[in-house]
Length: 365
Image (cartoon, rainbow, N blue to C red; front, side, top):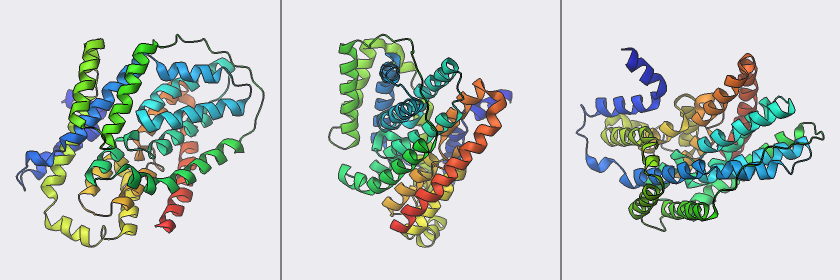
């Protein structure tokens, strides 16, 4: 029983997905066709590439090179936000925070500086940056495939929220006081150019597969083959639980898609763009935006509204985007006595962003 409890604490979303799939299968016969294997293939392929880029510490090396050129506190904050924001578009918000929040904590120790505010801004940057591209986060990957978006149609939807979000981040950044500083982080060894170019090429290949430019299965086979040749152990380190979580939600959505309750929700709550947007926004606050996107996609044809709702819905509560929990855990482990203050500041910045960005997008709908 204790093992079950521990597993539930480690993988609550996976457990919920499997339970929903199992229970709904008693009411509707599950079909293999419900599972979108293209999404699972590209998700696995991207995880493999990102795992290799983490292994050679490309992002760490790049960040250290940029940070050592900073001569003021504002420059330091700008670089930390910029690398988090941009990298989250390609390697997901989770990976960006797992890479750059520990770096921020190291800088804080070196300079004897409280990094609470900058880590919260990094979290905002990761969540807001990742919403701008299909591979930026799992819900975008799913919705891009589910609604058969093209690159042009996706970016057309997310362009205006992206501009508003970037303006909000810059407003918060330049609101703080500036000061002179001298930072000298130990230099990291530059990643081998051959390996770096190989995996950056594979990353571009997989982004092309997400955008429907290349076949997803061939992209996975090529990526897995290269990874196996370079280091087969990396194949064991992939987060396969995320793939099972997606499969569970696929089965659940397929099972309930023809039920009377779903038909009622489609005609009432999810029948309009505004209703879908607000439902996505609200559901993300309690379910997190990835499961919210997967559950609600089966209830509405308002693709743009749902895409906006679950992405902007990553602001707000700490569980609205599970990437936010990563930052909190990393900060709380280093500064346990400051954890409560961190949460209060986090909620202030996030709900302010939710109000400003979410309100602006609602009126634009």
